[in-house]
Length: 116
Image 1 (tube, rainbow, N blue to C red):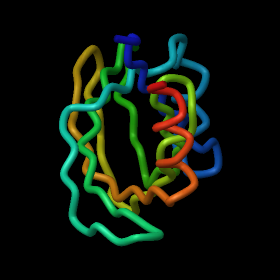
Image 2: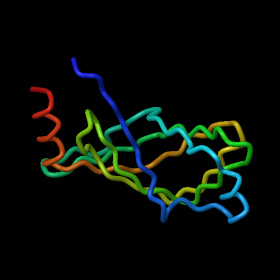
Image 3: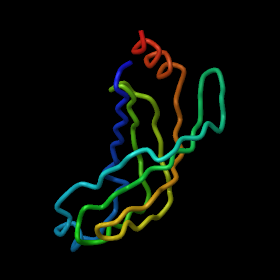
Image 4: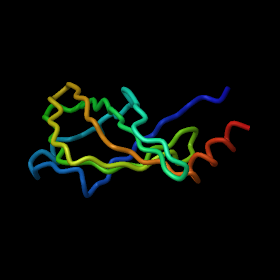
C-alpha cells in the first residue's frame, strides 16, 4: 500500500501576523491532520470538517486570522478549504484549528486512479 502523504499549504494572504513577529519567525509551522469528519456526501461534491494540529517551533506566538489551503493525498489534490477562525499558537506550542474542506468528483476520481 502506498504511503499516504497529506500536505497542507497555508494561503499567504490568509496568514496574518504583525510585522515585528514576522522578523522573529524563523521556522515554518508544522501542520498535520488531527481528524477528519465527513459532513455532506453528494455525487459531485463532498464536504468535510478537518481539524489541523498546528505546531509552532518558534520563540514567539503565532497569530492566525483565517486560513486557506489545498490538501493533497498521495501527492494528488484531495480537497480545498478555508476557515475564518482566529487561533493563537503559543511559542514552542501547538493548537488545533477546525476548518471546512470541499472535495469534488474529479478529485475523488484522481485518488481512485492513484490506488490502481
